[in-house]
Image (cartoon, rainbow, N blue to C red):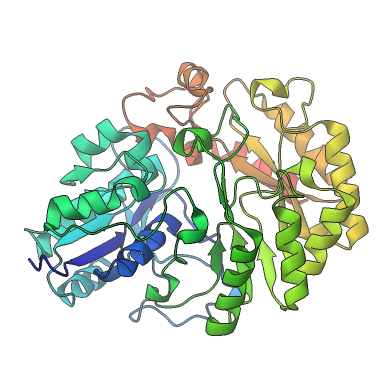
Length: 446
């Protein structure tokens, strides 16, 4: 071990699932940690098991489809308890021999940090950690990420990691490094001031197909289906100037045109945050595109913000609608009324957005939800001339819907995070029927 300058390896693990696709999905937390470690003088390496541009993979254009694309896929046996699901189960990501070779090409790590996004992806974490141990058996492995934070007890029992970090990484990162490497250092950033954070270490990737952009952390809402408040109870904002400078940096230094907003609430209090950012982007004269897979808050879409988003280059807009049962939606959230939704769509169209650019997320598979309700939501959204985008519900332990979800499920959700996989519609008593999903997809696409 080099206690004066330890080598820290960060690994984004494989996904084991029925379906996975790179819809602008990057391990933002892990890449921020990599950057923070570099700023403190540590030697940092990064391996992405989901790397679509691995040197051994078939060559593809990182800018195609604005940066989106399929992962390499290898068929696996379905996990115990899910054998009756009539879908194929696969490992998504690089081939195991590629990963083993990449590990062997590293100098011995003094510490390995692994993340995990979805709780039901933990089998991919298990395989990743086992592969690391096969090459570097003495390296301590720390697991963080959403799975570790939402299911810490399960992660400690099943992940294979030496330590599970259930706290926000920025709070405990340097303490963990000191604990496992013996190297202590004084923090060079303020965890509560996002302007003091470095940009994520996107340069560690094989290719940069798009730039994930986080202008704030936390969400002021407390929707019954979402764990955002549990993961980040505070609302932290970057200054508009700091955000615009980052966009200019990636555009100038790495010729990036596609930026993906990871914010949970970009247009909340737009006068103080969203509007100055949009105006700064416009004034910079950049020819770039923005995409919003995490959804834009509908109440924040006014005639002014719609026009600014259009002028700033927003290309893919997703609205957080969830359902058109406005009279009964208080059970899940209080974000929007029917009038506000219709008005927002009108503002976007008037600003110049085409119908194919605007999509409204509709939750599918909520506990007690009738399929007829989803079908009506799809029809209502299409009548406004925009795209219904189906978002399958995942039960999450600390959320208000968890108890209802567990009662509605044909599985024992408390027994194993695997049973919360949204691909199997877990909150229905009936066995999974592929024709149900097909019917909804066809209705949405018609």
